[in-house]
Image 1 (cartoon, rainbow, N blue to C red):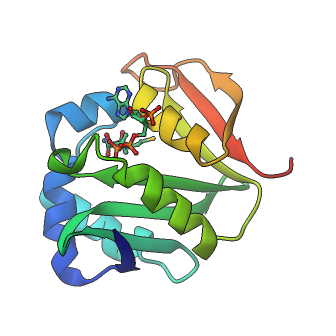
Image 2 (tube, protein in one colour):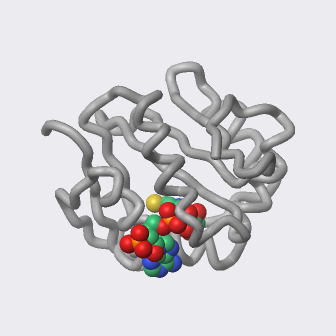
Length: 150
Ligand SMILES: CC(C)(COP(=O)(O)OP(=O)(O)OC[C@H]1O[C@@H](n2cnc3c(N)ncnc32)[C@H](O)[C@@H]1OP(=O)(O)O)[C@@H](O)C(=O)NCCC(=O)NCCS
């Protein structure tokens, strides 16, 4: 597994990963249409002040991990194609990413039912610090996980 800079060729694959129904249920996240997804990546995710890396496994693009500033917090998120799940890739990718992203505290919002993502975060040293009631129409509560000093 390696992390590398994101290229334009990665975006169509990230788009396919993000519209996978099982992934969307897990993350409790609404899918974006192709144009909206590409615009969001080009104008928001790939801003120079963010840290975003493509996860490559055996030469294949497996997903991404990214951090950004929002509401006064540095947040991290990741998303992988389903064929790469369950092999420890997200845990290895996030551990490696934490070397490139030195900001602490670092936070992550996780849907309460996304036990896989919570486990990834816990294995990388994050701890649950708060739970928010549902903010969106989907009715899913979210847990705030944090790494580093308050
Ligand atoms: C969540 C996600 C990143 C997990 O990736 P992964 O590479 O399969 O995770 P790992 O293999 O590193 O697993 C880490 C731990 O989580 C557990 N785990 C992973 N997926 C799980 C699941 N669906 N249910 C229960 N446990 C799960 C693993 O068993 C492992 O725990 P262990 O070491 O105690 O056995 C991946 O499923 C994904 O991209 N999902 C869709 C997008 C998403 O939810 N992103 C996160 C939003 S906060």
